Amino acid sequence: MKKIMPVAILISAALIVYSCSTPAYVEKDTSTNLSDYQTYMWVDIKATEDDASSRATSFADISVHNSVNEELQRWGWREVSENPDVLVSYDVLVERNVETQSDAVYSQPYSRLYYNRYTRRWSTIYYPSQFLGYQQYQVPVREATISITMMDADTDKKIWQGWTTERLGGSGITDLDVKKSIRNIFKESGNTSP
Image 1 (cartoon, rainbow, N blue to C red):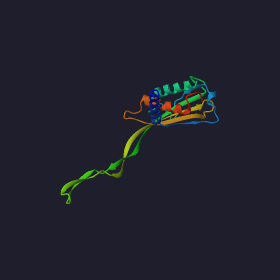
Image 2 (cartoon, one colour):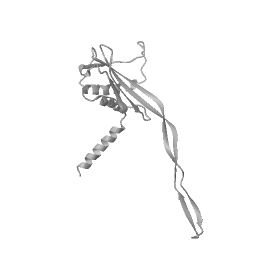
Image 3 (cartoon, rainbow, N blue to C red):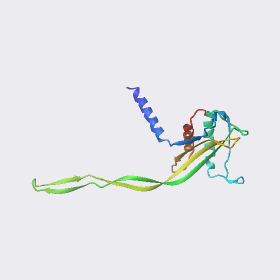
Image 4 (cartoon, rainbow, N blue to C red):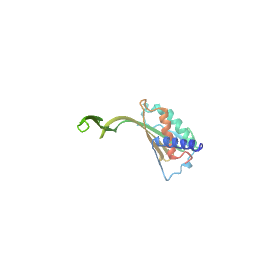
C-alpha cells in the first residue's frame, strides 16, 4: 500500500498537467516522407521584397528559433546556411478577444419570525438561498497563436505545419509560453523522427 500511493499521486499529477495543456494541431503532406529530409534553414516572411521594416513579433525570434531547433535536432535534422532540404518559417499572432463567462446567482437566505398560538411562543422559519439562474458577462482575453511551417526547398510545397493557441497572462507572451507552445506542437507530431 505504501508503494501504490506515490505512484497514484504521480499518475494523477501527470493527468492534471496533461489535461491543462492547450491543444496543438499538425497537418502533414501525406505524399511526403519526412524521414527523407536531413537539413533545414530558417527563412523570414515579409509582406513584399522591399519590406525592410521590423516585424511586430521579432521579440520572439530567439525563443522560437531555439525551441524549434531543439525539437528538430531530436528528429535528427541539422541546421545549414545553404542548400537545405527544408525551409522553416514561423508566425506569431497576438489578438484580443472577448470571452463570455457565466456565474451562478443565488438569492439571499433569510428568516422570518412567527407566533405559534398553540404553544404561545415565537419561532423562526429559515428560508435558505435558492438558485436564480446565471449571470453572463464579457471578459477581455489575449491569445497568442504560434504556427510553424516547413516547405520543401526544391518545390516550395508545404510539407508540414503545426500551430497552437495559448491564453496570455497580463505580461504578454513570454519565453516560457513560447517554449510550451512549441513543445505542444511537436508533441502532437511525435517527438521521434518522422
